[in-house]
Image 1 (cartoon, rainbow, N blue to C red):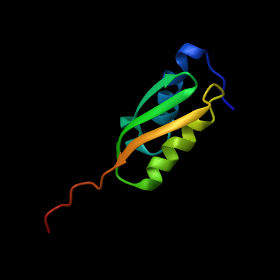
Image 2: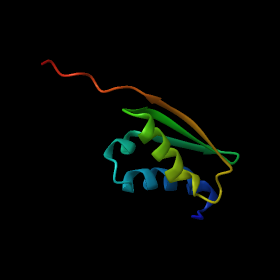
Image 3: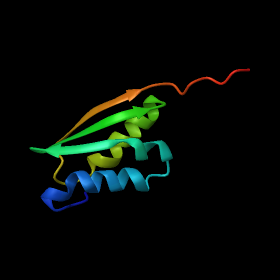
Image 4: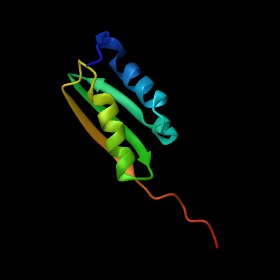
Length: 79
């Protein structure tokens, strides 16, 4: 478990996503209130959506993660 100052939970979550080896996670925003951390944004796969959720679930003050990340395939390139 990672512990944090209560006011810094969203900032800590964002930091964990920024330090993750998957660059697309840097585009995710985090909002924290009343023990709930909400993740918002778009990612190209369900795998990355789950990686984002697991990365922030380890924060001690987070009782629940609301994962509002949308999965959108990247635009296809013309052949």
